[in-house]
Image 1: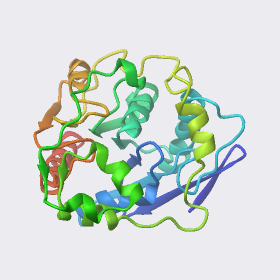
Image 2: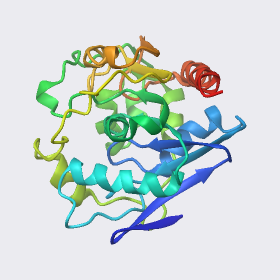
Image 3: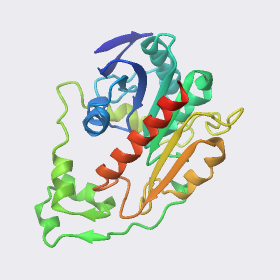
Length: 275
């Protein structure tokens, strides 16, 4: 579905009915790919309307010449969310860089938000300033690397658990429709400049701690965003469950059951909180 925000047709997907749960994908990821991950986990849960949004340059939302940094991307997301939730209170979920943008939404709309969940969150956007562990491989099935395509081999450089099970789940991701592959030139223009690939304000400098139920999940072996930086924002979230999962990199390999349990327990807490 599309909604016109300023001069940009913003793509979004909606599943279910009820309290709005706004879902923000990782950098270069599409809303439909995020839905592929999350819907099997919470799709059968009643009372929630899941709203997956393609930020500018992601999925089926085009880029725009006037969007040159994350401030402007966040501004457009805020306008999109305001229209889609239509005055209702809502809950936020963000994956990786989407977790950074979700905290930016929370910074500006904290009075309207009842809960926050962030998975493998980017806390610091500049790669050189992140506190991350060295890349490591904990599990590698014999011969698994011989099964990979050239593109998959590049991706597997950051995979901690290299198994056929994980490879099959990766290959099961939906292929983009025509016009759904994002705009990599537009995104690279932002990503390659540190001052563009961060907000001009500190998204974690909240005016007061966020009182809603929160879930933070990080991978112990995540060499992309790490886990230690996330601990530094914990005081912002007095109702947070903070989980660092062993045997898990940035793709949270083979952790679907754990994420399922944690996300549903988080939503239980949100439902109790807003009664």
